[in-house]
Image (cartoon, rainbow, N blue to C red):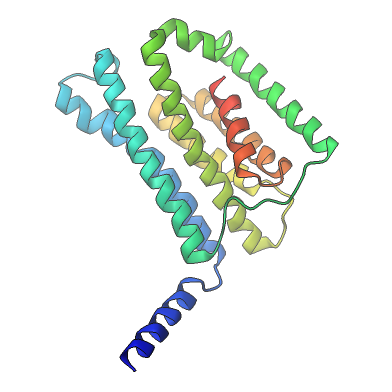
Length: 234
């Protein structure tokens, strides 16, 4: 009898955990992802400057790499927890998609890819990946791009959860709500972290296009991540 009661309790808990999710649930997940990105500000402007007794721009190569490692570890844990929460609590499997892409979708994705690379080229006065390598050297370049990969994962989650939020509210699936949300949050974050409105506007435009790409690839998370990483890092 005790065993049966325990099993019923477990079943009731699973039913509760898999309750019908609401838009607000996904909005919180999106904002948690944004807050996860913002944890770097605590490291970069509060904790590590006090530890190293120097501002970020004066850090040694070792200190900069340690910063990236700590930030990536934090972002990786947050990403894992958010994906697990969405799956377990709201029964939302991020790795499901809407099937194969049609030719017009591939063409549209290619257009977005070229547009973003051109925008990046103008912004950096050259290819970003080349400029980063020339400026940082091989060792810092490697860790910088590992850092970019983890950053891509988190802002991709803002897009995915943001898209789910507004689809729950408005019942419309073919508008890039997630791109708008990441444009507002991630763009604002760049204004605050870099102190540049232009950087924020450029980031906001990029975020919107990233949201469009997520829909163009039929919500395929793997394709989305690869494309977003290329557009963001190159």
